[in-house]
Amino acid sequence: MEQLASALGTVVVGVLACVAYFYGSNWLLDRVFPANAATPEGGIRNLRMAHAVRPWLFLGPALLALGLYLVYPAIDSIRLSLYNSDSTQFVGLDNYVWLWFDAGFRQSMFNNMLWLIFVPAMSTFFGLVIAALTDRIWWGNIAKSLIFMPMAISFIGASIIWKFVYEYRGEGSAQIGIVNAIVEALGGDPQAWITIPFWNNFFLMIILVWIQTGFAMVILSAALRGIPEETIEAATIDGANGVQIFFFIMVPQIWKTIAVVWTTITITVLKVFDIVFAMTNGQWDTQVLANYMYDWMFRGGGDFGRGATIAVVIMLLVVPIMIWNIRSATADTKGH
Image (cartoon, rainbow, N blue to C red; front, side, top):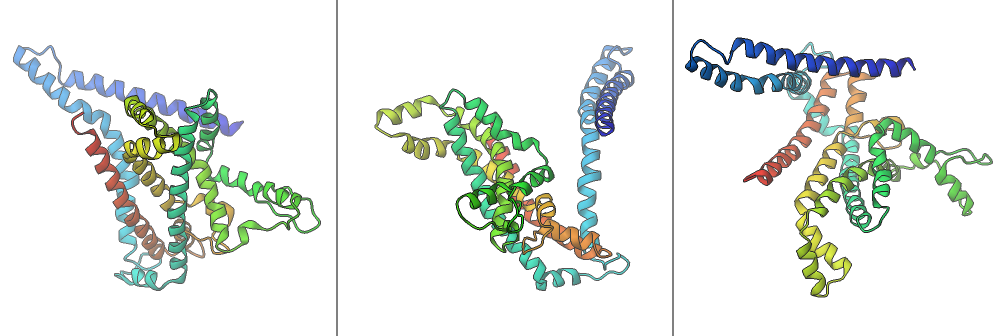
């Protein structure tokens, strides 16, 4: 209860602070550049100045926050990657040479590649299929709400839920995990699923697919509803069946939206940390880049140089995808 009150208090104070800032800054701007100046020319000049300054009053806090929490950490991470473990001695590219030959990094990269192949593909596919199917049934909005619900759960919360799904108890004990209970009911032997090398990566990926499918469904559902009915009616008249209409008429028209959803989920996958941390902590060959960075930076005394080097690699992998997303969004808005 105390934590809930603290969270609500923080929200209220934050909202009131924002209102006070925007109201106060506008009031001050109108006093500095008054519209009712001594001369008409002065009033016009003041209005122009106020209009030029006002957008920056709104953008200022956001730009300051971006600089403080995004730009500065990125630059400092690059700097730290060129120093030793406690940042007291410049070592140049030694940390990057270490990374190239490190077996743990190679394992993390391999696992991240698996995540990049599986999670965006499955999330986008299920989201697209569900978006198409739920638009055809009367209880589609209810189904969408249920499927979107995992998006409201934190990655740690989702991991705890799925810990119970994969829970394993020793032989002779009652299996409380859903998967093992089903396996046992079908006559199979219960397994400690998240300890099985290679396959355990997919068991962890399912958690992120479960979360991200709702996101993909909402975006793609909106895109599907934007398809002109004339094209679907024309295809129906030409004798196309439902599957053909879906794959050859609907999907090509929303391909750009599918690509944006895919790349957005890809960025999330490259930064995935919470699920691996909560479920296995990188054990049993499930290590990923973000968790590996955390291990090097904050555990065993910490090595800020090597941890920052892994962070730089993650950043280098994410940046091209973000640039592509921004360019695609810019190209789509041209002329509007």
